[in-house]
Image 1 (tube, helix red, strand yellow):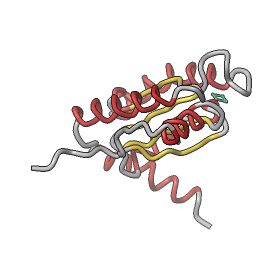
Image 2 (cartoon, helix red, strand yellow):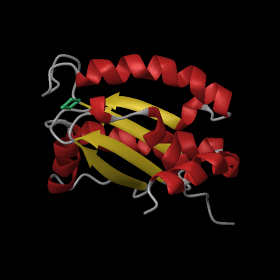
Image 3 (tube, protein in one colour):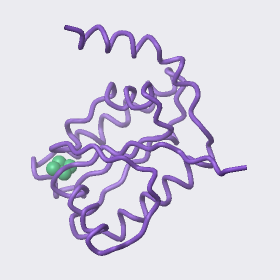
Length: 151
Ligand code: FES
């Protein structure tokens, strides 16, 4: 039987992790191919609904990664993201999403090898958790999102 291949969405900041992930490629460092990257200006842009939408659309796991503390190009976006995460955790519990499915990391533009490690570790951990089928319970979120963007 084929091994479960998790679908993982990575929300990364443009300035550090995205560039670090690019360095992974240009350095020809191999890593798992389960991750699809969504580039944002800063991790400070990430809100709870963005993460829930990823699950509602079939992701098995999510990576959030940005600049190291004190290196954010917008001064404090990563600190805002970290503070929001504390709030997210209790909401995830309420929504029935296992918090282990969301992985936070700091990866700088010079850390291509670290990005490969983050990806490989995330794939291994999410694979161990199995497929995220509970996303069907997030149907009301999907419905409200569709209504918001209809037009
Ligand atoms: Fe990278 Fe803010 S610009 S976390």
